[in-house]
Length: 267
Image (cartoon, rainbow, N blue to C red):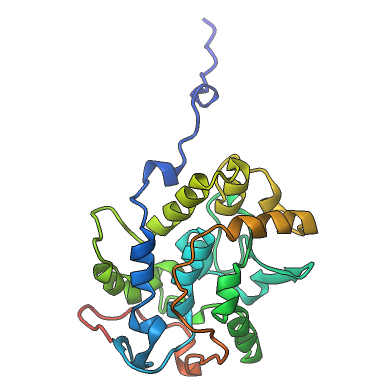
């Protein structure tokens, strides 16, 4: 008796993106502004007391990762694992390369893309930070997020345990289900509200079905200008912060793998 060929039900079903399946409530602009009024961005006591108000601003992963999340809409791990070589410039436009590297893989084929660096990130010293890290001999954008010891934790997980679990409770009117990933939905919804074409939104966010300009390894001027125009529509929530003209890096001893903070330590 002949055996029937197995049916591939994938031909009849549309893939459900994990981002959609686990969609979380977006942050409001007011919540975004509140986050960036905290001591890590407005001034802290010092390297060892980042969450206590003071006069010092330290430029590192704590300062820049959440800014990148807000002004790119990228996934936490995509940004936490960036290498300095993933920051490039062509045609006078600076951008990030989201791609697999020695620091980790990416979610899927659609996640490989280019993200233009927002003017607000440049104003807040991001490119100066990159140059300072290169001058210091570093290769990773945020080396302090490399997990220490024999662990399978990702760089984004280290940030989560070190900082986010202490920052999250300070977000005003935070609703159940709002997480760090919620900023990604904020970007998506804001661009949709401004009637940005879905193809451009997909290019920026790395959604399935993008297949567009954002995936180009060596993007042309027209592609970059489109991406720049898209990023420029993300709402500014850091207008209260001064230009970051002087970069203050973490001490070298802290720019390396270290264990996550012990529970209860909120320096």
